[in-house]
Length: 627
Image (cartoon, rainbow, N blue to C red; front, side, top):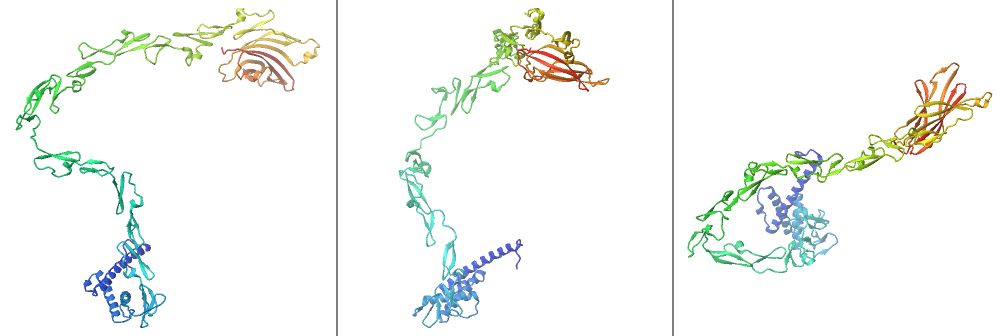
């Protein structure tokens, strides 16, 4: 097998070989067809005598075709047994059979199938078939392989049984359709109604397409655009030399005219009265001043202006134009702002300044002299500043007006006064509840009035006055039977204490485990922000913590028996200075005014189970206010 560079894979090598052999076969078939046609038309093959690969194949087929025709003329069988090779034998038999069919005049008898018998009992095949070597059977001729088809360029030959057909290799394309005879026929879009011409256009069919022509036709001198509009033709531009020499072309609507050339003087000149020559125009004597009030000097074919101070002459526009001093000398003419004027300039100052006597510099303007502020004004360089007295603030709208500060409405207004805040112009004042409180010296806090001290209470002689926040309470405590009152004080409260005092042989009293009954009093505010338990009463004992007495061990338990309103209180045991202490705490907020009596039990226990207790009644009064 021949080597093909770059084609190492077997499948790729096979494809390359097939493509080469296909191309060679088609080329040989075309050359062979050329040789057969020369033999049929000329009867000679001399015109193909050239030593090239193509003509060798063509001449071989031409010679073999002449052999077949000669066999037919000699009356020999078309299926001769000459050793001329397989392809030459096929060409020879094809030319012999084709000539035999054209010259056959004898009476024939048709038979079924692919063959017929002639008068001398010789079998010949129908057109498109060839006789097999047995002289009796026929087989199909591949006209496509032998190049015996009449397919045109762009068509591919497809062999059929006893014949062949030609098929186009490329579609007809847009605007054409394929007919039954394998030809491309133009589609008349105008007749079939598949065009898109508007109502003002008519359809004209063309090969492979169509055109939309306006129904309205334009006259001479006009051309029609794609929308059907008539546009004038400028003959002076579209035609070459429409007018004779010495005349100029002037376009008109739909036509043009020719006019004789006139003498054309240059700028700054005009024809004399005789119309024979050009003379200078004195622009300075024109009815309308050309220099706009400035001096004018006439020149040949032109003029120039003598501009006044503050103006410059523009040689292009030939006018005196204002000289913008502010742009030419920035920052050197005025201290602040420079404003150009016709022929000059003027200076101005920014806000807060006034023009000095020299007309160029700026002095500070004391705005406070015009009292722009509602209260106090301070002049600063180039401006001023308004400020307010205590209790007022500048308005955000104009920065000049002083507005009263509502101290009570500030975010901290709720903490300025203990009770109520009253705003006043430039200030504020605080007030306290009508009764039970008085304003403290700082003017903001409310302090409780102790009616029991001032003597403003109305308690009876048998009652004791107890001060509470914002008021007082008249209370009387009597000791139970078999108890007597003793004086004592507990931390943070006034206390009345009754101790058991039994008569001899009063076993009921002796066996009563309650050793003492106490009444204590406490006043609490309504806590504004209750974040953690508040310790209000401390019950101290003499029992050492973890102490051991001879033969006896003591333990102390604390308990709330009654009056725990909304479970707002609890009691815990704590060790303080080595002794047990019961601490009553407020664990939930209570909104006053409200009053309750907490009945507390302080029980002493021994290891043998013996116990005694002390009862403490805590009278709790919660004020309406937080102070």
